[in-house]
Amino acid sequence: MKNGILIGRRGGGFSGIIGWFIRIVIYDICITGISDILGVSRMVALFIFLGILAVISFGGYILKQRVAPGIED
Image (spheres, rainbow, N blue to C red):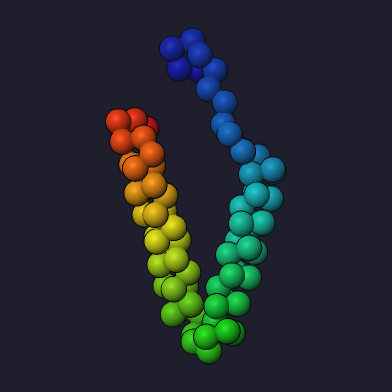
C-alpha cells in the first residue's frame, strides 16, 4: 500500500499474459504477411511494419493538433 491507497494493476495476471500472446500473434501475422507480399526478409518487414505504425501515430498527432490545438494530454 502506498499512502494508504491500494494501487491495482491493469491487465495483470493470467489475462495479461493472454493479451500479450494475442498481440504477439497479430504482429507476427502482419510481419509475415508483409514479408511474403513484398518478398523481403522478416527483419526488413519488421522495419516496414514499425514505419507504418510510426506514420499512423504521426498522422493521429497531426489530426489531433488540427482538431483541438489547445488540448494537451
